[in-house]
Every structure is written in structure tokens, then in C-alpha cells.
Image (cartoon, rainbow, N blue to C red; front, side):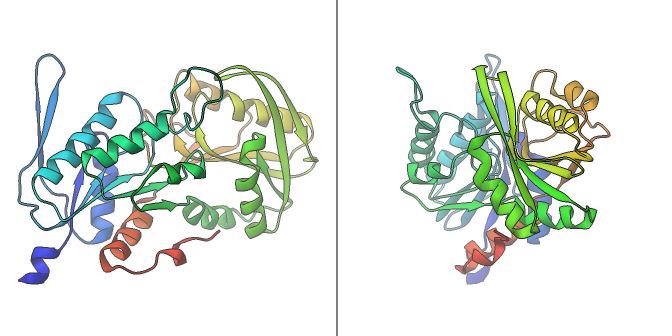
Length: 313
């Protein structure tokens, strides 16, 4: 009886129900019941429809726009705190607002830090996420952060492709560390794209550092938004004699005309995880599930065991 009282419960925010169901199934349980009341002005109120007193609670929800997704996570953390949950883990496969991780110009907010404080104030006692836009965001929290890496799920898929003359590429200087980590595991070469932005989501100029002629290239990035950078990089690499160009992007934000850009690009394939649900399916997009990875780490958190063996890099 005591073991049952302490067994964890998994709940989902509305934007991540499908992924949360897969995580719960991989964990070996079912999603807990949450009812959300909507008011005519757009306000909403989630409520747990079962007791969570003394339990460890996992709340699964990616916080991509709109801001309602973040607000729902905050409200559910607050509700769990007020319902006397023992531990509250905010499982955020995609941690939104992470691009605002520093003051890169005068008089701007550091949105990632603000979100961290909001989550802690709401009652989150632990954060679980994957491929943060900047690793240092972990330091914005005073609570434990389990920062998982999508390489754990992507690298086995890449190896299954059995590509010869493989080269890993970073679409910008900031992603070079990630590219080098992939290349070390795959024992491949690395090339870097150097880009200058005209403004957010608009590239003024791009240049390639390294050789891609005759290579099967895989671009690696943490997210894909409008698709402008990756499609431009793929075009540049094919012009320089690449045999094929694929892209791995953990978080498929895919805003604006991103789907059309990808479909019409020289990318052979775009490989993404399911941290954010796709708005539509197209032939060039391959989805690799992160559900088992999160379920395994959640088991280890519940059992107070190390998660370091989950990292391939």
C-alpha cells in the first residue's frame, strides 16, 4: 500500500498530449486525468481530477508559442503545489523562450531567465528538458535540471543510414560544439557555416568553412524555425559539390512558410524529434520519437539513480 501511495503520476498539458501518452506508455502507466475549464474571454483553469497528495508528479508540456502553453504549465505546477504533491517535475521537451538567454542589445529582456523564475515560483521542484538552445540556461534555475541530449535518439538513426563519406555540419558558429560532438561519435569530418543576419530570421550572407565535395553532409541544429538557414546552407553545400545534404533538428518549430521551403529545398531529409507536434506531414520530414528517452530518465529520477548512462555524448 505504501509503495502505491508513493508511485508517480504523469499528466499532460494540452499541447503535448500525444507525446505525453507515448511517454506514459513507455513508462508503464497511463496519463492522469486533467480537466480544463475555459472561460469565454480566453482564460482557462486546469484541474487534477485525482489525488496527488504525497506523490511525485511529472507534468509534460513543451512551451512553444502561443504563451498559453507556458501559462498552462505554470498553472498546472501551481495546482500540483496546492494539492500537496511531494515533488513536481516540469517535463518540458522543448523549453520555449530559450533564444532570449542574454542581453545581446540594450533594453531587452532575458526571457529564459524569467521563465526559469516563473516555473520555480509556480512550484516546480525539478526541470527536465532536451537540447536547450544554450547550455548555460541550466544555471538560471536554483532547482535540479535534467538536460537530455537528442543525440541519444538521433545517432542510432544516422548510423542506420550507413552513409559513406559522411561529414557533419553546423549551420552557424554557435552550433560548432554540437557538430563536433556528433562528428566525434561518428568519426567524421566537420564543416561550419558562417552567417551574418540582417535581422531575426533573415540571413544577409552565408559562407562555408570546410570542404563538402563528394560528401554526404548532415547539418545538426537544436531547432528549425522558418527553415531559412538550413535550406540556404543545403543549397550552398550542393553548389560546392556535396553528394547529399540532410538535417537533424531537435525541435521542429516550423513557422511561416517553413514547410514549403523544406519541400522545395535540396535537403534529402529533415530528421526531427516529436518535442513539438508537426502541423502537417511532408515526405521529407522524418520524426524520431523521444518518448522512450524521457520515460527512462523519469524512471531513474523516481528511483534516485544516475542518468549519465543515457548520454551518447
